Length: 109
Image (cartoon, rainbow, N blue to C red; front, side, top):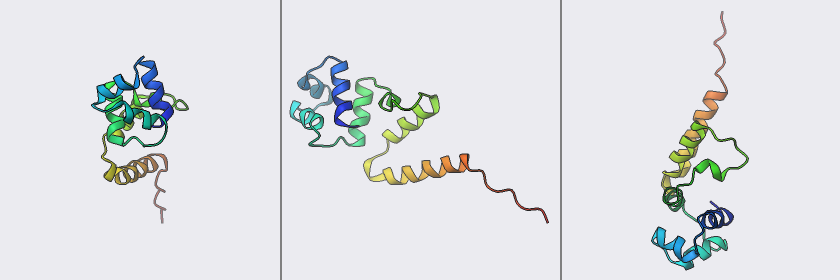
């Protein structure tokens, strides 16, 4: 979740940085630093923002058409702690590749 997305969510909710931060248990300074790109939002915090402000994860991906499966996958990924994200990524990639690229049929002798 980038600075523009955080600002867009906050402005859509018509909140000040102070109000937005208070809803998350944070200071206005933390929100300012996110919006300025000084600090990055962790996955856990991004998931909290999505839940707190009732934002659908797929809405952050405008180039993708919304789908129930995409929404479920994004929700699952957002729930993964930062230290386990590579493992989750590898699992999802293996699953998608396994579904898209079918194994070769065994050759008949």
